Image (cartoon, rainbow, N blue to C red; front, top):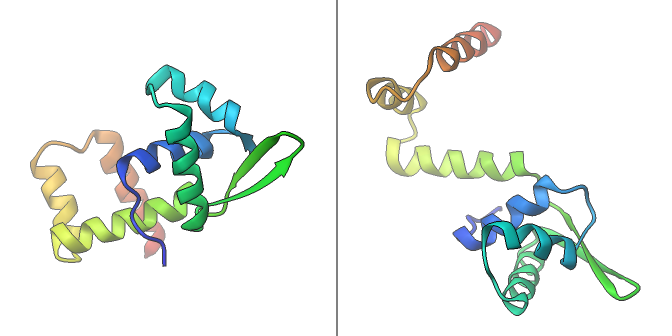
Length: 122
């Protein structure tokens, strides 16, 4: 079962998901310098954790360690969304959509997309 990632590990996975696998530690560090100022040891520790949790596989090629995602972004987001709906909306997708609609968080494009998806389901 896929477990929820802490925010920092999710940020690291986000970079890896956006990159063409495999991605090296140096490539990850290069991407991080634009967003977050983490020390290299912190990144290495999180990469080890993500590998141990089954989110990444790693292999050493020469002097570089290469990482590839084992769990896709879509798989992870499905788990996050399901957990959110279960925890905060009582397993009701309708309740979630109603909340977003009433809070004016749905654009016209969002509504058209929902209509399209509902028609596909029929």
